[in-house]
Amino acid sequence: MENIDFLNIQQFYFWIYQLVGSIFHYLNPFTIIDFLYKYWPQMMFYSAIISIACIVCLYYLFQKLKGVKEKDHEVFNTVISPFTDAGESSQKNGRWERILNYMESDSQTEWRLAILDADVVLDQMLTKSGYHGDSTGEKLKQVERSDFNTIDCAWEAHKVRNSIAHSGSDIILTKRMAKKTVDSYRQVFEEFEYI
Image (tube, rainbow, N blue to C red; front, side, top):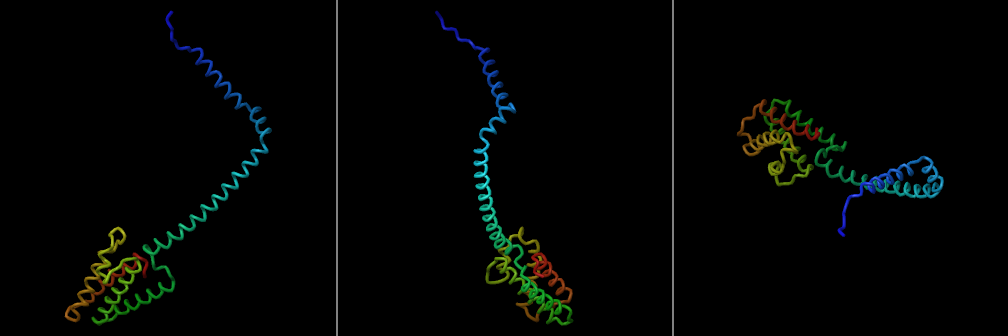
């Protein structure tokens, strides 16, 4: 006699019926209340342990996050705005005031001093921002344009400074050119909150 294989649909319906019946049995409010009544002390005990463990983990993570924030502040605040110290800021502003005083003069010599002094400030600013080199020009070459919006102003002003430093009194410096150069330095210093 041959074996006959067939799909018993009635058996599938029976399994679905049992599944739905068991779901409704466990979702029955009386079953839930009975379960809570029976296991409430154990649930409270385990909930307290889990809550304490979560609080300890949160405290640990908070402390770790605090350490990361401090490191982040040390690393990134130095590069982005390293000039937030009040004493140093007032000293830099005092130096900037002296540069501006040089510019108010009618003397080419004092205009030259203003530009030379401003370039010294630029060099110090670049060093504090993490750029290294033997000269301001070498430090400027290391700068990424994305990190330094006024890089063109810095180069323009530094080139004028080089002309003054190397040519001395041979170069004729007009008041307009001196003001433009000092203004370029000003834009750089303002970007990095140096003045």
